[in-house]
View (cartoon, rainbow, N blue to C red):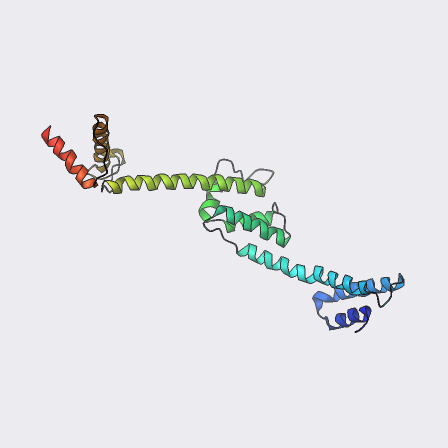
Length: 226
């Protein structure tokens, strides 16, 4: 097997290109200095140190570039927690600061457009501020805006469930002042229906789950008897 110094020189001879020429020259200076310091050609540290410098210069750099490319392509999906965890991991692997202007711009494009717009339109955000927002501020506001959206979505779902339970379909009208639920005034019917059932429970009626149509027939019957 060749001496460690010979292995290094042989490997350097196979390396060629504009991107490695400067690095090769630096390695030759390092080997020359080692020889001047009395390091023997048979010293295995010559080979080990060279391999470590090679990995630091090229292997790790390739990994950084790969992580940076992944970061640029990252898009927010369902979980906001997973999104921020992945974003910060890739930024760390790419070796870029989180508070860097370019990182913040990447974050804006990685988040859902609706979430980014909600943050920019929030009262806390001031685009003219002397000190730009840090990554932490962007993350905190993103979580707040996302939470508000979730609460609003849950409210809308419950509201739709109420109409579905009573087979009522809200419709838009040209007169928002009348409630905007159509000429049949379905919202008013829903309120009255709910009030009547609450009154029945207050009078000691037994609570039982029945088909909404059956409930409506019972109410209509009671109203007819009155």
